[in-house]
Length: 393
Image 1 (cartoon, helix red, strand yellow):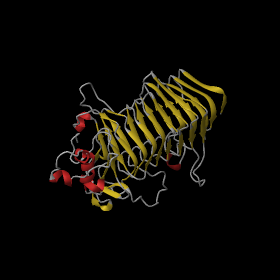
Image 2: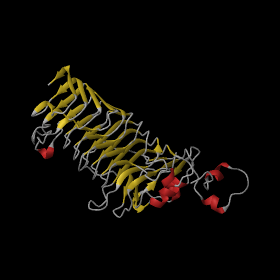
Image 3: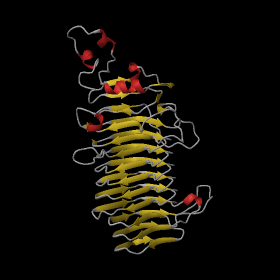
Image 4: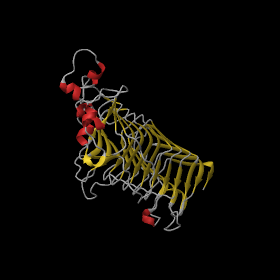
């Protein structure tokens, strides 16, 4: 990439005579959009379009957009998004029932795909960029991993590595990848110490049926996530560590193979507003934080029928569980409800509405808490555990 990408300046300049190479190079629109078909992509559901898509991305100047018109683009290696460049599809799916046909648009890795993620976002050091890794964006895109071998290597849907600021996802769906749906991780080679992506902004994002976690956030401080939905992933729906001073609004975890939300070791404040869970195998929200500077605020959250435990119920699982935590956990308008599957089958869950043990500070000021065995469980070893006068248990 670079500011002198062939075709970009040639289109804007009227001076001189363009060379044959410049005349043959694709040019973006006046809006700075690069159509991948001009770079050789087919989008026919069969052709390997990896090289063509990457060529379009590498031709971008900061602020440009690479556009994937309607079609299904097969890939055999990770697509890398440079700093300040947008990858734009035509449609990012929402919730789909299991067994419905997979979409015939967006990115679909081939069975022989090799690499760590379908889309890879790297920081300046790992990417070898001339500028800091700021504002990579993905809009209106579906990533369908259904053709990846289930017994093969784990492949993430989107992976962001290192010191990357302001990753933006809007109207994006990741489905059926064999690894983590959306994964953020450290670059340990940064001179001033390990660095992870921060200031994430996600809106209307769905992650479905992954082989591992739905979404993994490592130290993604100062982030805002709204209407992000995780369904049917084999690990925890959300694995969140060190992501303080962040806000989660109307986010959801459903039918996860482990916890709905697993929150670990952060400082600063995390706020969950209007978030919900349903029928996760383990706890709906589990807090394990050994940093006494951490604060979790739950406002109007709804935790439903978690602790499914393979349909058996029991197992000591809870809608909200706080264990071995020094963080401050405060909840108002908390609704924890027990029940069976939609068809009335299997055992009712969770075993406990709220369960707290060996923790420093948990206060539930208001709401309704229901558990099959016990609504409110004090597991001992707690310094402060209180429920408000209007809490119904």
